[in-house]
Image 1 (tube, rainbow, N blue to C red):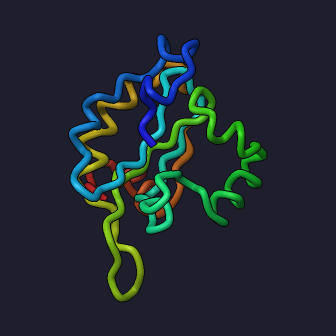
Image 2: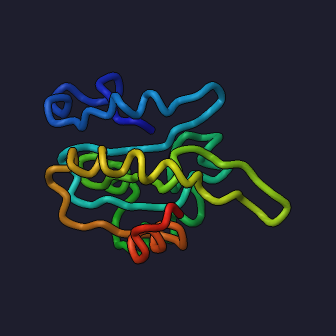
Length: 145
C-alpha cells in the first residue's frame, strides 16, 4: 500500500512522503507493500509480505496483525493511519515459497530503499523491528539479510 495523493484526503497531501522512487519497484504481477507518511511517529520494520498480504495489498491484515496490534495496544484504525504508523518491510514484495515456507526477503531491497525512505520520515520517534531478518539487519548492519 503506497501512500499517494489518490488515496490521501486533501488535508494530508501537503505532508505526505514523496515515495515516487518506489514506483520503480513495481514489476508486473508484483505487489509492493509500503505504507509511509512523513508525519508518522512510529515505523514498523517487518520481513517481507507473505502470500495473504501479496494477494490483499494490506500489510498485517491477518491473525499476526491482530496479535501485533493487541501487543502494541493500538486500534486497527490507528494502526492503518499512515500519519501515525508507517510500515516498511525488509523485502518490498512477496518472495515466493519453497517446501519449508516463504522464501527470505530479497537481500537488495532494504539496503537500496531504507536509506532513501527514512530521511523522509521527519516525525519519527520509534522504530520497531519485527522478525529475524529485520533484527539481523539492525544488529549486524554489514549483512544484507
